[in-house]
Amino acid sequence: MCGIVGYVGRQQAAPILIEGLHRLEYRGYDSAGIALAGGKALKLFKAKGKVRSLEAVLPKRLAGKTGIAHTRWATHGEPSDRNAHPHCDADGRIAVVHNGIVENAAALRAGLEAEGIVFLSETDTEVLAHLIARAGTGALEDDVRQALKAVEGAYGIAVLDADRPDRLVVARNGSPVVLGIGDKEMFVASDPAALVRHTQQVIYLDDGEMAVLEKDGFHTSTLDAQPTAKTPTTLEWASASYGKDGFAHFMRKEIAEQPESVARMLQGRLDKRFMSAHFGGLNIEARDLLDIDRVKILGCGSAFIASGFGAQAIEQLARIPATVEPASEFRYRNPVIERNTLYVAVSQSGETLDTLMAVQEIRRKGGRVLGIVNAVGSTIARACSGGIYLHAGPEVAVVATKTFTSTLVAFALLALYLGRIRDLSPAAGARLIEALEALPAQIEEILAQEEPIRRLGEDLAETRHMFFIGRALGYPVALEGALKLKEVSYIHAEAYPASELKHGPLALIAPETPTLVVLPHDELLEKNLSSVQEVKARKGPVIALTHPGELPLEVDARIDVPRSEPLLDPILLGIPLQLLAYHTAIALGRDIDQPRNLAKSVTVE
Image 1 (cartoon, rainbow, N blue to C red):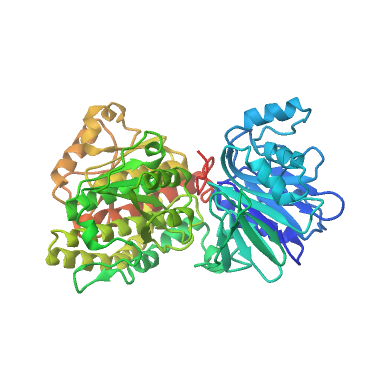
Image 2 (cartoon, rainbow, N blue to C red):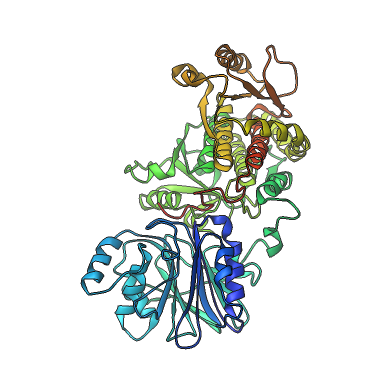
């Protein structure tokens, strides 16, 4: 959500900044802009729409070796040229790009307007530019410090001063800022994806930190001007990992990468000696886990849905009560934090603001939090006491595919580990390990059956509404299938526990409303077939997501998925629903990798 890129160094900044903006397009945005220092005044260009719209208004020769750029996702003010970042002060000397929200912007704006300052945009960010300009301390970093002390809310900012073109000042509070270290050059971005082409050495700022960047290096400090020490981190993925590799869309590429990403998730984590799982970063002793009375899992979006699977898996294997809650709700209800509860925070990006704030609230009250994240070095990963990295590789499409599947695998491993500490037998552990090892090849088998799923997706393109239903472990599969379809195709889709059909949703079943039923051949098959009968009795079309073999009744379409251990079936059942959403969206001509109104990493409320 929004993207920051900045550069100071030996090279012309504009090509680096524009290339960085393209790298950040996947985060979701509605306008873009760039500001360069060089000469007597800033060179500022902004445009509503995609980065290519910004490129269209840039002059062919655009000199300047220090600059900042931004992709904006609208919060204050509609998408427009004037609301696009960077924003400047009244004299056009200070330029600011900003991710986050200034919560007291209205009050600050009113005070500045009373002083005679005229605002040119509707944004909260313009307030920052005026506050920095009026500070007048003589040092840009001190001007930024003084301005930020008046600000309430979340921010990641980069500041450029026409009078001091040899430096950038950046700061963060709740919104990620990453520094890139080059040879006689420095970079800044909100996401390492913008940096990987230029450097593998990065510094992650913490909340309440700021940095001054010059071509020869950087220094960091707190907002109270106390120096801080930072150690560079080497990025896990190289620039080539962010390409499409011949696929038409990142989403399709990332679906295809799942056999490899699941295999990577399992690598080194299967303990065949004790028929358990092995983790290097939980930072909790087995004896401490014996004292755990319950598990509470927190996430948003697909991470929340994956957490629903995780809670059921932990209860089944470890016999520990486990629940899941949206992190976005948890943080607002003054939650009771229990000493013997293990909290698990799930965020593929590791930067989801709602989840981060929930982690901070738990830690503040003395709770113990594990993180399940994909991005190494991300804020949530660093805020948790330990956790599990997914190692799924960069996921560029807004909709989660391979990270969702890898999160399910992570929960299966965690449940196996907790179960073997408690009462799960070695024989049961051995069966699960064998089934886990078989997953990559089974996913390959599913991907090889894409053609009938493509045809079904084309048929569904005429649909306006759709239901997804499933019982027990099938319910998270239904939830994720509905979410994927609505995210990428814009078809209205709802998911319900199959048992809830007769408690209201059945009123909407009709010949023009298909229902996809998650129908594994498990102990709940007969119950699920009863739900199919209820839909068919109302003339509703039925799509069965099932295992090979006969069904005792007719359905309008079916998708067969290889069988696994019943606990692991949801991992495989979710793969065809990703393909189904993708091909439905293709048939409708949607923007596959950047669906409207959505962002990859939600770093504002």
